[in-house]
Each structure stands twice: as structure tokens, then as C-alpha cells.
Image 1 (tube, one colour):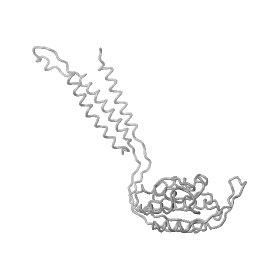
Image 2 (image 1 turned 90 degrees about the vertical axis):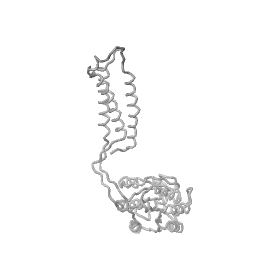
Image 3 (image 1 turned 30 degrees about the vertical axis):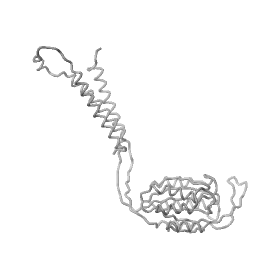
Image 4 (image 1 turned 90 degrees about the horizontal axis):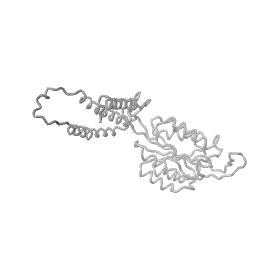
Length: 324
């Protein structure tokens, strides 16, 4: 299989090269003024003339091998195309400082990551991605079927990776941008937050209207309880009291606008049930190609090109050598 089959169009260069070669040899035919050429009619064609053509042919072979090598031939141990049910889903995870609240065990942030990882493990046929947001948003993982890479990305996210704040609209916009390229008919965003929008460039309702126009459902999850929380800095030197209040009304509106659903999770068990309910999302059929162990196969072609060109040069500077 060729990774870049369109590069085979480079073989069209053979046309002008062969035209040039034929024209060049026609014009290079030696002439001799004699009264009759009959005595030369039965003379055999010199083997050097055939070797001259062979030298040109070897160069064409070398060029053809290089073109094939540029097309990146690849081999697969196996290839299987299957039709499965799946959907495109982006997880939009709030990583603001308030997620350090300990009304979850060990805190909201770690509990959310743990449940998200379990959810990813259950969605075997889905195209999943990850967006994180705080005072700004970041598209951390594009849509992928690589469960291991996505889980690794979720587990390595830390609070403090972005400026603090809660930019729900920006997080939602980043998730929408990632979903636009998805191929599934069913597209969904799972937005998990514990606060109120207080940062960012895009109002949450504007982002919700954009999601609706793209046919994207947004499932919003409000995490935690409405109460003041104590946040201790990583070194344990100071403690800050932070008031957290989930803007349930906005989260419900976002879900309603996009035909999604709003959930409130006040503890780990409820949060797990929320993800289990979302696991029953609408699915659509997808054609998935599964490959195992892809190997590059361009080296034999490069070796063949080198051998063909070396043989051509060997003929050029030995048997076909020209003496000035």
C-alpha cells in the first residue's frame, strides 16, 4: 500500500526523457560519403549499441524506483474494515482552582479525572477528544481512537496548567472546533465544571447557539456542592477561602439549546452514574479500518535504484567509455 499514491504521477516525466533520448540518438547517427552502402548492409549491430540503450534503461529503472520510494510503500500485518456503532465525543474538563475542593475524594479534580478515564475505557468504538479550560481553553487531544493516548492525556492534566478562572464559553468553543472535523452523525460534548463563567472571550450562550447550528449536543455536568471551600497552596504555607457556586441556570440553558441534558453531581457515586447515563448516548454506524504493525517498505526500492544507477555508471565508464 502506498501512503502517497498521487506521487505516481511523477512517472509522466518518462515521456519527455524518452523523447529526448530517441531524438538525441537519431541526430547522433554518423554519416560517411560513399558510392554505395551495400557492402555494409550485412554487418551486425555492435553490442555496444545495445549496451548504450541498456545504460539508459537502467537509469529509467533507477528513477522509477526512487518515485515509488517517495510514494512511501507500507506493509501491514493485517487490515480489517468493520462497521460499528460509534459517536464523536469531546470531554471539556474544568481545571480551575476551585476544582481542588475536597467535597469529593480526594478532590473534585481527581475524582472527575478518574470517572472520565473509566468512561473512555467503556467507549471502545467512539472517536474521543479532550479540551481543558480555566481562565482560558486548550484543545489538548484531537478526536482519536487511541484510548491509551487519551487516557494518558487525562491523567497528566494538572490544575495550574492554564490561567485561573472559569471560561465556560471558550472551553465549549474549543470543543466545537474539534468536533467539526468528525465523521459521525452523532456529535456530543460533555462539559464538566464547578463554577460560573467569569473569564474568556466567548459567552456561553453564544457557544451553545453555535453548537446547535452544527448539530452538536452538549451534556453539562455541575460538580460539587455550593459552599465555601478551603484551598491550600501546594507547599502548605497558606490557605485560601474560596466561594464556589455553580451557575445551574446557564448550564441548563446550554443543554436545552443543544438538545442535551444537565446533570448535577454532588458526590463521586452520582458523578459515576451521570457518566453511565451519558454512556447511553445516541450512536451512529461508522466504517473503522483496523491495522496492526505498519512497516515502511521504501528501503528495497531505494536499494534497487542505487544498484540500477551503479550498473549504468559502470557501463558508462568501462565498456562505453569515450575517448576524447
